[in-house]
Image (cartoon, rainbow, N blue to C red; front, side, top):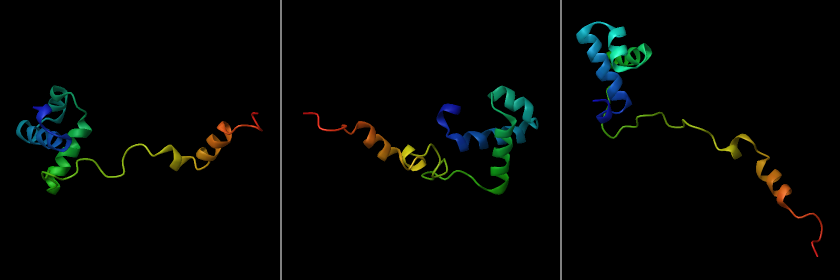
Length: 89
């Protein structure tokens, strides 16, 4: 089942399983996920934050920043490193 659902759908499916069975720990062990994942799914369902097809799954701006953004002098340092010293001829 997990292979056909995205992250948000999976969390919400697990939340519905908890509502049906009434035990977060049992569902978490069976699904091999943390209880926090299920609790987040429950919060999403209760707040009405359901998945809409075509909607972004992950928040925009996540992930690793470019190294040139974090180290402003990197390009200058690389240029000075590879620049030839003096006249090669």
